[in-house]
Image (cartoon, rainbow, N blue to C red):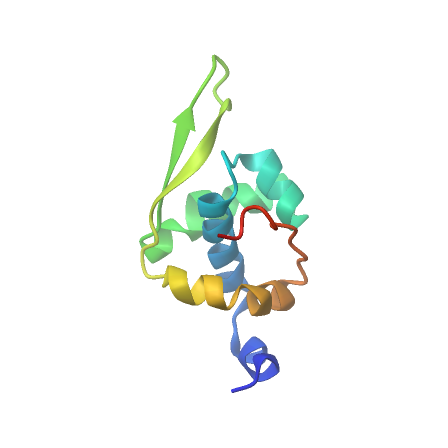
Length: 110
């Protein structure tokens, strides 16, 4: 199946969730501002995906508190849930195509 035909079959809502899970695992110390910058999405979209979208797939994300303010810290992906992380990594360019997101993760792609 060609990448274009795969892209036409993917649900953008699920793609957003897979992309956020991928970014949480691959960006050093990811927090809302870094995820917003990586995706170009508004703060509320990123927050909703983490708080409501990912748990619906069994994905476990923990916020690691640092500092004195309640939002000082970063996210840690504990479990991919129903997502196959190898499939997500392999198909990341297609996921980004579906979402119209251009990622610059040259040092975080491993």
